[in-house]
Length: 287
Image (cartoon, rainbow, N blue to C red; front, side, top):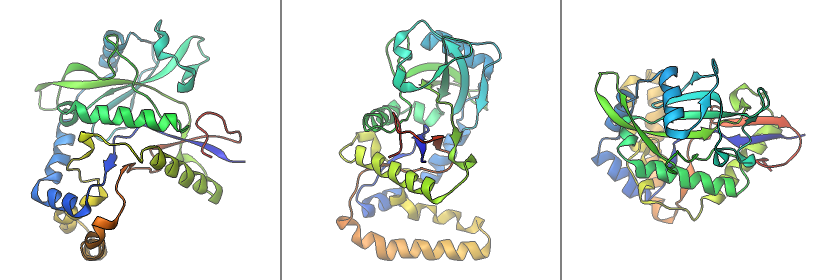
């Protein structure tokens, strides 16, 4: 009996351009600085602010005591159980209905970091990619429309240094499940994960967007950009990673023009995959 796998939301949709071009772009720019900026520009928000944004931007009413802060790399994510009179937020395919109390639903309110808030085109790129993945039968969230009918809303929000910025805000359906990292690993589950990952790649095989072409240190095509981090590693690990970088530059880059390139989900890890109950196919099934 197989377990069902679903993609949790992740921002790392990557576009592998010509590897040589991507590597050169990364070295000529400052992807490490961009990455640091994302952390510095992580918005400051609390549960009370989440409730305000949920009400004013998306017309949902969080239930008392249901809001909690979720772990996030450089954004602010809040879970809430909420009610709403808006039918466009309650599609059955979202699988986020909550039976207690009746008529309530699970949501995530996501306040984006300052860097990506200045480039809403990249967030749009994510939204379009998620729609293609859902259409292929793999469950992942969708960007729910705001009261103005937009998938990306905006709100003023402070940063840690006290400065106020205009941040992008999205509302997403939250599907109750456990993370892959909390599931008992096994060959069948890992095969299922490989199958779901392949289906995602197939769903995105013809997808492109101008904002998918960017300098981003998590893009494997820009692997060489992590060289400045080598001194931070223990000597034995430093040697291993340095050898890997040399192999990349001497073996992979010369073949770059012959390698396939497309948008992928570049961060299918144990914290970005949801595991459903064993058995049954159904919507979002992994195979």
